[in-house]
Image (tube, rainbow, N blue to C red; front, side, top):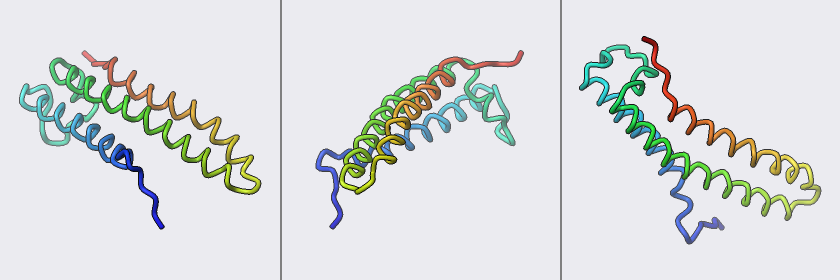
Length: 121
């Protein structure tokens, strides 16, 4: 029997990935419209280095970062709950305890990268 979350948290990974995809496509379209990059074989890193595409990209990634923080914490709680049912799940609990801060740092790193664009002049 499959258990689903009655609160709708099972849609969070889809929302997270969709927002990241939308942020990349939106910044690319704006960069092409502003003639900041060429549409053929662009350097994706150049699509969010100038304003306004940089601002929109940063805001959408910040929203995705917030959802990502929630996802990491929910996954931590899921593994903790499941590992407590296992015999000898101590190793899983220890790894889970170390993976929570690692996941939070990785998600926050995504936000830092989005908010401090580097452009080569």
